Length: 306
Image 1: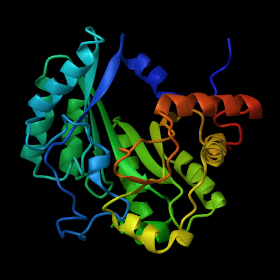
Image 2 (image 1 turned 180 degrees about the horizontal axis):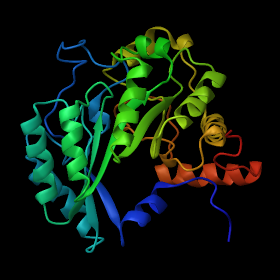
Image 3 (image 1 turned 90 degrees about the horizontal axis):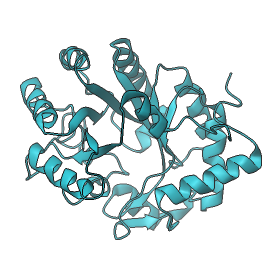
Image 4 (image 1 turned 60 degrees about the horizontal axis):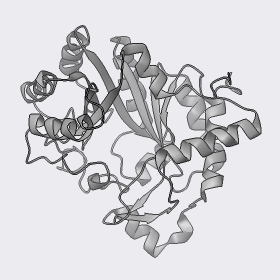
């Protein structure tokens, strides 16, 4: 049997659950401090939340309705499937504590839901909410995923992120110290970053108590500031072909601490919203191609980690 080339998310879930488990994205009706004027307006230059959300993930529906629609979609094929409520849209910890708790508890009350995943920003994790999540994690599966995007402050400023890398380090350390599964999102290929700088993200993140990481290729999306910038100055962007990105992702994985779970290497935006890159591969097709390249290079996650 071939050895595992990287620490994959499916195997991670099997350690926590018996049987199939599927994430269902939820729009909890939250906004973002980088949009409402608290710290900025316009949001991150790459962001269009339409790219994240399936059809049933609409804020005009209740949390229960969104989950039930998602469950109906999957249950036709997998009647015994169980589900993780994934609060994905915008900043899912950005509200008054009682309203946050009400939405999380509503999600967990839906039949078949066996845990919760909360996507948020590192500057939106107050101590009071973390205290609640500590208690919640004693009775169900809880993961907090932070949008880190880059470990370089110059990049974070350029994309109008609204926080620095030190803020991400603090949030990750506090969450992991509370014994909550802690994840990070990172974009490979943000403008201005060299290949070596992208690889340094792996080294820096490996020093943090992370459990999971999601890698995303840079996607230029219609209706975003970055999409408009690309139209005016394409020379500011390095848009790799798929084979170049695969080698970049493998180079990153080689430097990543081997126990960190790599949830995915790419994301998929709706074709009608995507400006570039157009690779034409589904996630599982990309992963198969990446694994084939790892075998060709005879390499694995953590091979160069020190």
